[in-house]
Image (tube, rainbow, N blue to C red; front, side, top):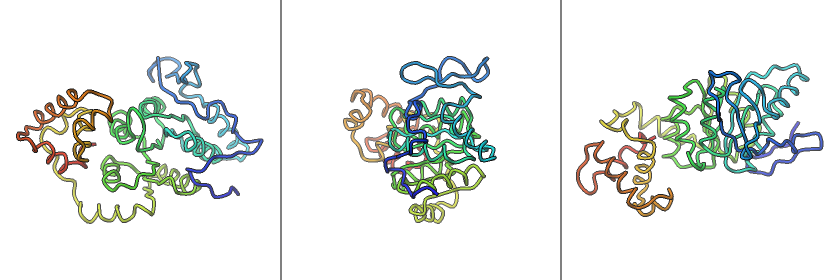
Length: 290
């Protein structure tokens, strides 16, 4: 029996545990080779050293496989996890490595690394934080729908925002777990999703009910919305949050003029005219801007 531990608490391991695993907090990215090339894609850490190849477990995956063999259980769930908070990532990784049914393939610390790893390794489940640098979890999930549609997405987040939850559900997320949950509940959620079920944190049940009650059918997609780039969609979501162009520029690290150009391109693609038409569109169609 392991003590009840929440995702946000500091992970601790005994002398025989994997606390010294050199791959535990590695930010990874897929480089060099595509899935169809000999040897498969390679994964490197920030120092450029290869950590593992497709089809071969990383140190943590090898440890999980060894533990499973000792317990007579074959790992059936291949998993990629991503979070930019080291303590959260380490705590989740330790919990998954102790579960004999799960093989942990990759631990990523940003959205782009998570996307590249999921596309390369095609795991059963990708566990993503909503807020990550580079690409947020929602952008990763949207890209996976096109590039790796068989990967089931689970969001593990501290974000209780109802609009964000609705976006995640619109994107087809199979799970939405809060970081305040006990580790054993998070593991159970991943296992349920891998088995084809949905798993939503009980704290978000009211949001799920309202979504079902007020949105029985998906609204028609406005003309032009599918032609928007990921950056344009992100800017429109920020417009819907009532941020000014200056505030958007500061958050994205781009110039005010660049934001204005993006807004103008959005209005052109969506055939919008008038000073407030883009703001109204962004607010009315926020759930579709994912």
